[in-house]
Image (cartoon, rainbow, N blue to C red):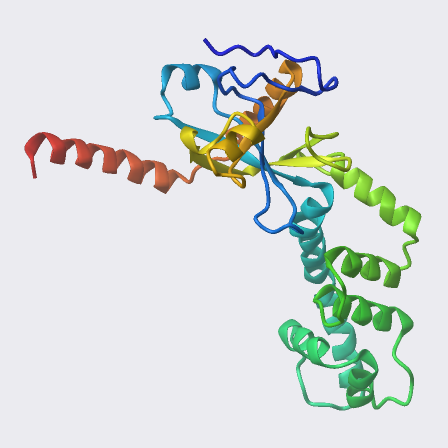
Length: 292
């Protein structure tokens, strides 16, 4: 029987440590140590149902979702999406604005969105303005700001990381650091729609605050590839293998699986796919029974 209780009081209101003798369970927190000394550990969260583990319905395989730091979530997923959204929303406005300047300059050229992005990727805004603006008047300040923002959003300028790029973009748009920080807090808090992640305040055997369970990043692994503790992994000469470091308390682990179930229950299938699936099932059954 899978026991959701723990043997140790170590932990907090969100998770507890688990005695090595306890079987794996839904909500177990996994950690993998890096192969390199300077690397960061990886984390996962088992989502296989307790009853499936006990009854062996998963064929001795465990399913888990990837868990990353808040910063990793922002730089891998949220910020790239924000940059793409800005480009998609503003490139047409910028192309139309610059195209109007070119027409007033009697340039027989139709500027497309793709061409504008290509120019911005290789040229400074001042150079573009000098090449196409022959009206004798400077470009509109709003258009210049938009062009500089687009150039930043597509990565034409060098930045240390995705966060620096996003902050540079927001600075061009006139958003102060307090507004930027507030927007990040809102994003991590799940604001702006139904989130496909679950924010955990902290994790055992981890430093820092705020870890994100990525509900769409689902992995499976053989149960014998996971060890009950770091010591167990080292004894088996597998120091970098996944090992259990704790377990979410019942209310939290049930909330994670509830959100996971709701997330995927919202995904509908096209009618033609459902029709094709029924046809495939009928043909497969016929083939199996007739030996064709």
